[in-house]
Length: 339
Image (cartoon, rainbow, N blue to C red):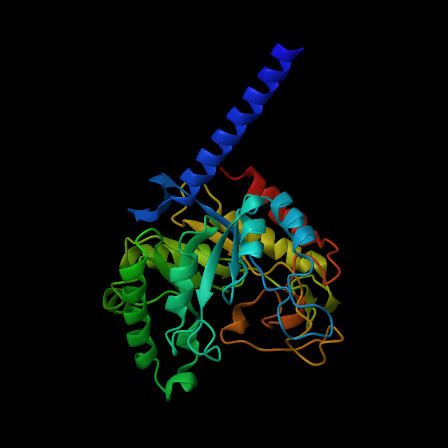
């Protein structure tokens, strides 16, 4: 009995030591770029992602009150990466994300009221504080700001200067994570050369259900890694078109998502990742946050399948109540079967 007890204790201690060493090793992971690939400790890593900005019914601010259930649904769908639109300043939430086997792309905005944004340079405080957290995959600066010259005095030239300088500043304090930007559509060769501190490019692409053409165009102007920071479709048809009925239409969303992912998740894909927009519907985007409203418009929305309209409150692959739409199963099958 005593011998058996000692064996059990030894086994438990060995397990604790092994797990501690594994965690320490992962905390020291190095994310980088190698050729046209994103890597973790020199091993290729393909982003199978979902945009995640959960806002509860009747609210306008992000909330993680359903994070436990969300992570189970997200993980079950074969997702390995979350893309968030503002930093997560809670270590507890980052721990939960990492414990679920997921990583996170942290996005910094230009002007977020002085909260970890580029304008105030407080984003560097966040990088310093969280650069060692194992959930962090990479830093992403801006979200299709090239569509919004009005935010920068009528010209995005100032934004590009800030973008490159901010990427440089991050690299001075963190050498273990690359820096990206989420650009609306394919950047020009001149812009890529100008923004020489950007390690990899995220593309927000809405070309009906044919995003693959963007990869071909990008490969002609750069050999840097490229990922789709946003792609997908909404579940509302503002018109009857291509055989899809007017109104709420999960099938239109699912079919478009299937075709889109088939374009990107190929054996010889030139992408290093695909991030579907988005996990939940967002009732806060158009009309009252108490109801799911039709409407909303974004730059480049004429490319949204299959009605050329971005109905902003209908983009989730699950509803606000976390009911799975048809598109959820499409994403699940596509991601779980890829690589």
